[in-house]
Image (cartoon, rainbow, N blue to C red; front, top):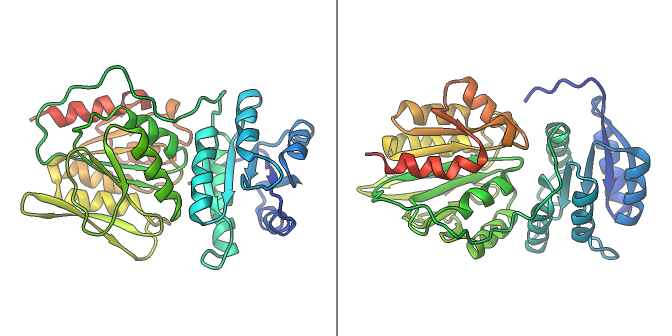
Length: 348
């Protein structure tokens, strides 16, 4: 994703670890388009520095022992909404906390550097996301926790239909909204959301508690069946396969594609190959170009395709690239994505 900046993106780093603050400050400051204007060891100091320094983006560790970072984030989004990226540990506990932070209004999450995730990889990803979200439209936040709608969309018979959805930055909120409107018998759905391992586990578990459909982190060999949503596990690619009339997924290791693992491109290309005209694809908010060519392959194979519109995206990168290459049959606001998916599924 290309970014043209008239000025540096001002970043405030909030983390209780002095070592992490130092590492992040040093690494982020190496990028000429980023200025680390300050650091804070806890939300109390962060609050004062936000007022004094007026940062464009906040990086936040929400697992701070002396202060509830989630409460801080909710107050921040209510009184001073701004782009916040969570920097969290790659653990099951960290994943659940990160999901709470995303629900409270954070726009994205990255892993802290650790034994399995190098400083270079973590900071490169963080730099890209800081630039992507710096111009994001952040408004007073309302929780994305799913509430059961009073009305459900009616469904006709959708045998062999497949929904394939890709998302990145802002996608947790977007997918929560889209899936909240899925009826219990929605077509089998496969999703790639850019997210590290454990985070996808927690994300799927939360959605499963809150949606009418069953949502789970995909395992190799899982069948794609009506009423079930499979989310690609962080750190692995997910591909659609077909055996007779049955669809299933393969979970595989491999190199990054479009700089991502899991990659939307990998999923969409496999859907184009094995589902063809039986599929409906949607590309939602996110940075970069992952999935654009794959969605075009889906459309060329006879699938219906949807891209989220610019006004409703946190980051318009992925949908923009898909629209530019002619991959999107329909461009729609987030509020109409589910309706559009189901209308396409009902067509013969």
